[in-house]
Image (cartoon, rainbow, N blue to C red; front, side, top):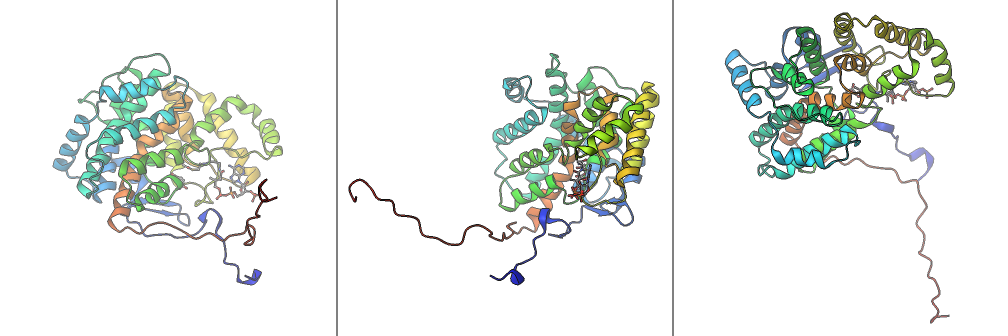
Length: 381
Ligand SMILES: CC(=O)SCCNC(=O)CCNC(=O)[C@H](O)C(C)(C)COP(=O)(O)OP(=O)(O)OC[C@H]1O[C@@H](n2cnc3c(N)ncnc32)[C@H](O)[C@@H]1OP(=O)(O)O
Ligand SMILES: O=C([O-])CC(=O)C(=O)O
């Protein structure tokens, strides 16, 4: 093949549309994000995470009766079987919480007799099951790694209040519940990001929903994707305080480091979700009286954006927000899992409903064809 005839390679599939989706629309030109047509900011201001999860799966917001039935189902599925806890307990105490969550989801899939049933109804049921159980898994891991016991879920609490209850064993105050719920809504869905695309690739082979979610958790762990919210907090720890930002950036940029929590494959002028999460962070800073954290947050964002023209993404305000709520830094990405399981499973259902095996082409650039050398043996010599 001559050089002229070489097909164009789209590294990282950047800018390549690979399929349709009716679940969400990311528009970098207008800096907007729609879930099933609704602006995410309006959903965050007016809906609970349960309503948004329902919207992502069913395509419409629930009426009061539908919401009541959905909430009853979700609340009834929250608890963890003894076997799931046993599997979690068998893992090293210093395992990364993302590995723990991935293993727990994989175990739930292995133990669910409905796993092979790939009907849309069965898949939706599995999605709601994971949605309901992930808070118990993540909250338990937050406690286990700190030597604390499992806290049973409470059916009298909404999703976010119960999540915080299970993580910290005390009833959270309203500003904390609201900020947490907003973060879950903002993290829920974002079109063909790397983890969702992973889930769709796995689904395209006709593998089961649990396999697709397990794979998606693996893809989310990396710091170029969901792992960035954890990495942001490590950066905050390194920098220390607002007055050190300039010197820290000189060194980090000099060493050509990537600054986690900044930049995005699709948004080049800022992430549509950041203003809403920033407002939630400000309310937490006021509630916990931590102006120093906001000063550091603002100084780093302003200085980095001024120097590089690269804006914060959602992981930038989420990291310090989860820190203020009391979560360990390593638990931040598992919180993202709990939210994104809604988007992943909506995409799994969409992919399965109009499936085509996802199998792109590669362009070979290795050795030309050659003969395997025939080596002389002792007998033939
Ligand atoms: C919820 C989410 O998953 S949002 C994403 C979370 N990830 C992060 O925050 C990790 C840090 N950010 C990044 O690594 C990138 O911005 C990505 C991976 C998110 C997007 O990257 P891409 O679209 O592939 O752009 P790419 O990495 O090629 O960056 C383009 C240029 O900007 C630079 N750049 C982009 N982001 C950053 C950053 N955070 N810090 C320093 N430089 C950056 C790159 O070094 C590159 O520079 P160059 O052209 O001189 O080589
Ligand atoms: O869209 C992306 O590439 C990453 C992202 O922001 C997300 O998954 O929320």
